[in-house]
Length: 147
Image (cartoon, rainbow, N blue to C red; front, side):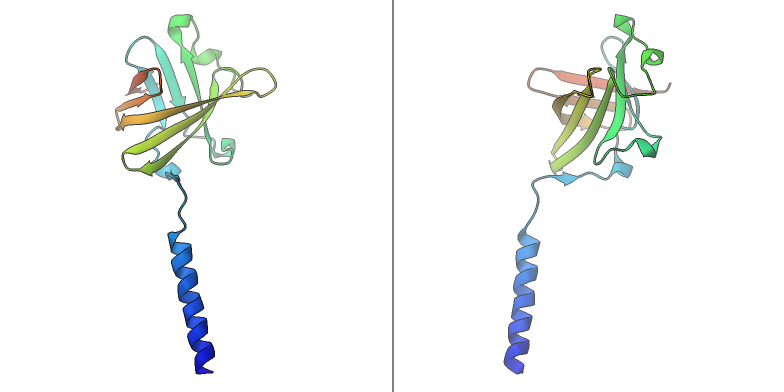
């Protein structure tokens, strides 16, 4: 009986050690602490982003919804069609591998049968008033605005 208890204890300890060492590459940032919520204006030009805060029913898996428009191209927030997710809309989520390596994943919608264009950015810095991220081509800088 003592031998069975020792083997059972050893098995449980090994299971805990093996399970504790099995980590995913990416860890999700909690949505409640997401610093992206709200309106952002690009520091050059009149390009805007809105990362959605309301309408929890719009959540789609790990992604939240947002949309963008560029007033320099005569496209305004009122032009974004709110009844369906088409041009101007995107889904987003943030993941992190470490405190210094945060990734912004976006899926931009097209008007043709739900096709999406994936975009991936590295967050350079974020605060309650500024957002800077980059991809392989450019760095994008935004300030928080009230609408």
